[in-house]
Length: 147
Image (cartoon, rainbow, N blue to C red):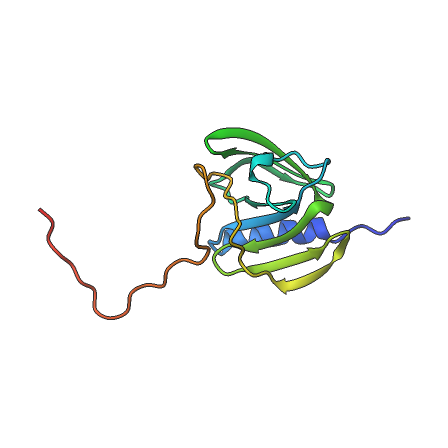
């Protein structure tokens, strides 16, 4: 009997942790002929997908596939990714998550640094330039009257 891969279980658990923590879960995916993703957003054979509840519809993560529908540049796409092609899942805001070695779905890392080449599933045309949110201003708040 072959041993079950731990990767789909980690994916589901970390997705749930991100959402429960108020973070945006992102997937980094190695794109090959088994993936169904918009090729215009693939860079260096990879794509980064925002899989947050507000960015996707009908998200399914089973032991073999991650599937959902999302809009890229205003156009709806059906996304299908084999679990083995997922390279990492992480929280966009903190970079915390887990990475999986290509071809070895059970080896992992504790933290994945945020990437500049991210593609949000609900992005209008281009990916965002900065990954980390700006820190809140220090000091006393300043208000001004706008007429």
